[in-house]
Image (cartoon, rainbow, N blue to C red; front, side):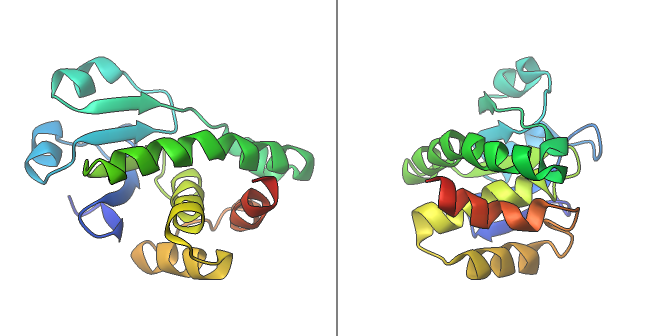
Length: 152
């Protein structure tokens, strides 16, 4: 659980995916998580068998490196953010992950904070980076929250 970082305590967190940092689904369940949002392809069978609600929303991280594709990626984040908001509003603590748990995950968490918690881009980025200092540090990812605001 030391890989988990909370942006909304008790309700919304990020972490690396199981390919990067193996996880114990029973421990995640015991810690209160009820929903897992995967921003990369994973085998959801085990996740669902452990009782979790599981959503796959693969986002191609490489899109953030190219300015024309960066805007498209910002638009693709919108339905993911709204899905997360529905889970959180229903009181289901939600865990979001990509492979490394920092760039795609950080951008999606920041977008959620902007759209559903009313934070500014700078506030959202700062809050996510307080929780995970490595969040949105790869080229292009720090621009995604601002592009997300323009896209919605």
